[in-house]
Length: 164
Image (cartoon, rainbow, N blue to C red; front, side, top):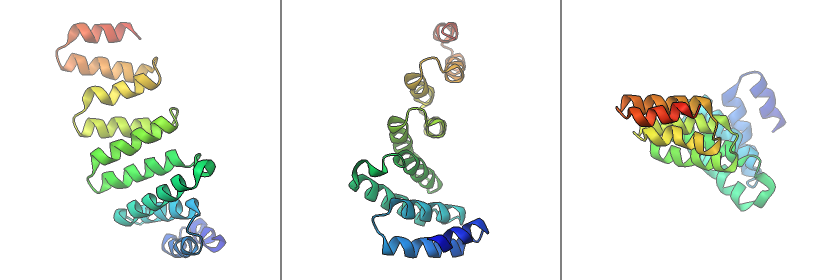
């Protein structure tokens, strides 16, 4: 693992990945090793392997109880990103949503969830989730108002804008 970190610091990602993969084989219940392997695969552009590593990290983390709770939101976010690269946007939404539920202040999860929901045509849900989690979220309210304007629902847009 230490050697993998040295390679990583030198931006030798392929070499670092080999070290972290081997460490994960030796310590299969170490969530961070699976998680880092997924990150390396992502950096190298191998999103299928990244997805597999993040799924392994998620499985091990969920089996390990609360010990890995702090890492679960980020695992969900990174898994969602890998899924989006494979064109699985709806599945990615579920992982972004799970990350936002686990950590309502995880703004990257919220941003990616909004973008993914827009990508699958869930326009209202894209902004409503932010508003549900943080009722005074000015950017989300402004965007939701703009969405209503674009849809020709001017009365509803006015109500949203008045809530700013």
